[in-house]
Length: 496
Image 1 (cartoon, rainbow, N blue to C red):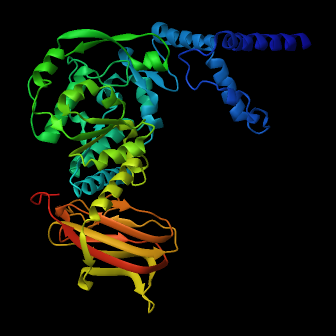
Image 2: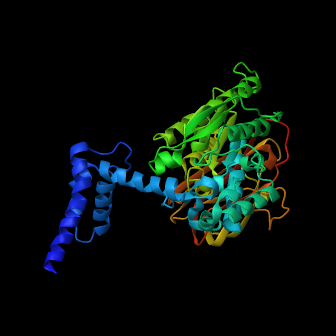
């Protein structure tokens, strides 16, 4: 038994010595991710008795990031893909006919609820109204995940791993069409037959040149009304190093890709006077891989990636220039989180920047105290001191100016830490339960103390009634003041 134990220890030492020795003599493999730092190797957490998770993570990365460790990973993945024809890692899973799919995009098979979808879609329209109030045309576009465009290529294992993904994608699109959402859904132009040229790479997470062209033609129509018709014919072919084999599996792989240089130069010439001017584009990787083509359509666009380390400052600077168009793109798998909890939420970089830019414009509005017959208080009792005592679900209904772009300013003091919500009135209440909806609202600060909100809305809201929930439960409001006014309209009233 002792001899067996010694043999086991020796085998483990040899197993560990190979990758660690290669790490010492050769350094980190250039392809390694999350490389070990000297700070981590000398951290006191390595000796903390109850921090086994930290030690395991450091040890795993120490081995896997070594040249020997990375070679072992490459060999194992190459064997799975090229010999056995099937791979299933934490990031990549094989589909049918040699297709690969990005597993995190399946989101563990989670389902989107109708409630979350409704709030998400409503939030996009609320953002659009806040932007429109200051003269900006805000549009959001969605790039569909590959499994949504090509569910027939999933195969049994990948189809099982997707869980609710395909059903959820159909559900949110059905609700979006029913509610007449302004979202530009690139899925709408990704229809295909079995014999059609591919729109996505078999082994990449992104669309190919043909998929990009279809999406860009759709953008032109959505933003300008100009329809770009005609067949899209290839003029050449190149080899493309696809991301899932090369970046995620660490094996060399290229895939043939059709090029369309002649079509692009003919349809979107560099000297075209039909380019879309004055546009700020916030995007993820789908538009990132489409830069060259987008530059044929937009005139000197300002591109900004979500991954920019100065994104908050850059977004504010971009909005300060009052661009005519703000186009925000996200891949479908990140859509819900980005809208409700990420960059596009009211506490995210874009949502907050739009609120601040709107408030700045509203500051130029000539205000006066709202008329008494233009106000209605619910679950708010005025005290002899002039303060208001709030019950559960207090509301202030404010009649907006009858003409122009209506402005409102609401200020008060409170000691409670509860958010203020502003509900935008719904003009077309078909398929709605009332004039207000959780998604079509603004979430403002919850900081105790003085609060002062300025807001300007598009002329669509003139004469309508705004709902303000100063807090959402019991508390006291002091020095409450409500003012209204209007700024001139940008254009004749349009249907909202």
